[in-house]
Amino acid sequence: MRLLLFLIICQCAINSVNTHHVSKPNIILLMADDLGIGDLGCYGNRTLRTPNIDRLAEEGVTLTQHLAASPLCTPSRAAFLTGRYPIRSGMAAFSRVGVFLFSASSGGLPSEEITFSELLKQRGYATALIGKWHLGMNCESSNDFCHHPLSHGFDYFYGLTVTNLRDCKPGQGSVFLKGVQKSLVIPIQIAGITLVSLVIVQYIGLLKVPFKALGYCLLITAISVAVLIFFFYHFRHLNCFLMRDHQIIQQPLSYENLTQRLTKEAIQFIGRNTDAPFLLVLSYLHVHTALYASKNFRGKSKHGLYGDAVEEMDWSVGQVLDMLEEYNLSNNTLVYFTSDQGAHVEEISSSGEVHGGHNGIYKGGKSTNWEGGIRVPGLLRWPGVIPAGARMDEPTSNMDVFPTIVKLAEAELPSDRIIDGHDLMPLLQGKVTQTKHEFLFHYCNAYLNAVRWHPGNSASVWKVFFFTPNFSPEGSNGCYDSHVCFCHGGFITRHDPPLLFDLSRDPEEKVPLTPETESHFYEILRVIYLAVDNHTRSLHAVPNQLSWDNLLWKPWLQPCCSSLFQSCYCDYDSEGNLPEVHSG
View 1 (spheres, rainbow, N blue to C red):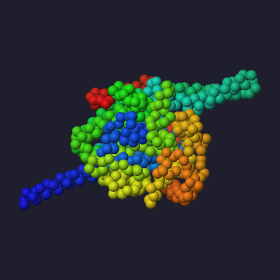
View 2: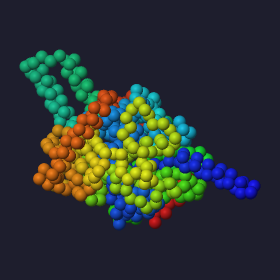
View 3: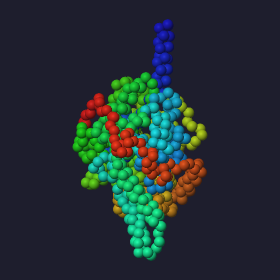
View 4: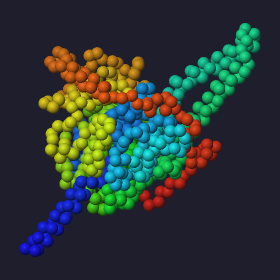
């Protein structure tokens, strides 16, 4: 009897420990950059090798209608971290440019916003962000770090504060050249012609122009041109650098073994925190251009450098999963894999090689709210807690990660603001069959572009577009002439009435419905307009973090590990003891 009682007590103690671990699991969030949903084997790809990512699908849940809150990096990542539409935090632009492009910009994720990393840190989690941030850095000085990851709940940061751009890698071209030529060459020509004309009329005596005024105009023009030439000539040094916490450790960034270095940092962080709950956000630079791949992967895929980069990222995911196995952490760790938006279909190199990914059957890509721009991979694995091999077709959002992991960490959701995401666990565990997202609002920058409605009593998923981008050339699947699609003016076509699709029957968004082909056409629009009205009334005016003033380069905010006169050069990043690489 005593032996039986002893065994019962032991079993209760073990169950108590297991319950504790399950209630506060480790969290690993893996986010690719510009990865197409059609690039992975678990979503139907048969030519790229992604066995480790596919393993997450085999051992967990595959979300087939998982959506980015924005089709652009900066607003999508802001929504991911906060669980809120980016329009609520001022992280959605009213101008043409919808992301941060320079390290010395003053905009960024406001300190008033609450991130899941802050809330988990308060609950005793060790927190780290490794890889891409792209949510700002400084406000008023080059070292105030008001928007830096360490100011938003991360204990440790190793990565890039802006993003990986073609301009960061010699020989890969420029994302700015065409825009600069269009935007600046003509104004400079006009200024030059005006100054020359003023000098001529002054010389022949037709008009008296104060000499000082001419001198000041000439000086201002010369300084402006010199600053622009200096900035773009040194763009790589000024904007493409690697940081550890607040310190720049490599400027400019070297692509040599970069994925191995990011992976090494990730597995070392896991190794340092095996005895306490941790949050790891591994935010890959793959597969945003400039594309790169280590020599073990270069030339090994069937899809050029893009495929090589995808397969190298898959290797990195495998290293993280192997680390969990090594420390017996798999059963106590929720792993999530996604992309910040769909593939950038317009990415084609100067030699004609496709450098953008594949969005499967879905229309459009990055920068658009067609399904190809916002429908992204959504894979979640937690052995013993969520089912293995399940597929769910309910609309879900990257904003859902916020309330999901905050609740798992036994933290309180903020009560002073609207959280747009919903806890995924009831859906993942089969406790409910339908998402709480009756409506999802799709913004193109700060402009409400489309709305998705999934009625509770229907299998239909209705989607309306108030405007759509003008693809160029006409009849193509993207805006190849401008490299990305824009959200206003002559770049779009407005629709009245809106375009209506039923994604449950037409996921490719091929044939808009009409009053003749859909008997409930106007009733559907009426419900959606009411939802838009309710949503719009929930918005409050906030400072625009992506205004031109916040976007432009400010020399006094420029971070530099040496000095401007030394071209901001340093390399303190050691590559010792990199993880062993096998390309498969």
